[in-house]
Image (cartoon, rainbow, N blue to C red):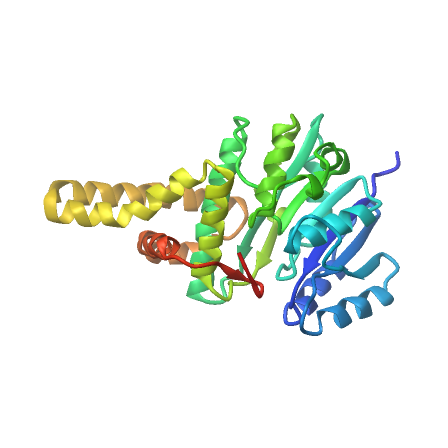
Length: 327
């Protein structure tokens, strides 16, 4: 039986520092018999991004590079580029990733395994960071803990979130919603796309395995990234705002216990340690990242402090500057 063709779509803006890492991981991909194409879209970059992707595509028959004009879609930024690339795609499945990603070798077969069930529209992989520093380890642990919880919730058909740096769609599902062109603008375009497909009645899968684990790099500004996520969550009405809000208020709650109800402070902190400890042990074992367990004591302290700062920063007025654009 002939396997379906896959199109991998990547939007890039001012990514000259990250491109070699991404493209090297693409060259290491195992296709397992799947034919695939790489579509690289330059989003009005002001550095050598365009030159690098065109040089890469020129040497490879499976890759194409495009300089995407500004007026190609009603969408803005990354969503505009992805809409353009989707229009060029010849695959029956659309894979999405970002320029700051290092893809796992078995990414393609791992993600395609998620489409085994009938009417599956979207498959989400997992993304972390290599523990090259304590900062990278803690950010990775935070996000992988969330993704593990979403993986567990997906077992009872509870949808979580889309991730534009590690996501695959059936072209049928994408076309059924009219593509990015038919969606309202959002600074979290991946979640908007994910939700539209789920709302259309398609199934979803939230993977959690080593073969779907991609590695990203720390954002240039951690607080700006999280503010963008939270602002996008408010715009889209994501249920993930509820645990985010609870996490933001956890540190003030512990402080309140210290001053007004000391008998509750130790049980509350112990509960946090037990819950995070159990979750971390399970997910690090599942994806063979047990080396991160040495950061667990620091992680327990990091999480409430970081999210309190994120909450304060999100409340500050002003636009979000991301990839050289204001939102």
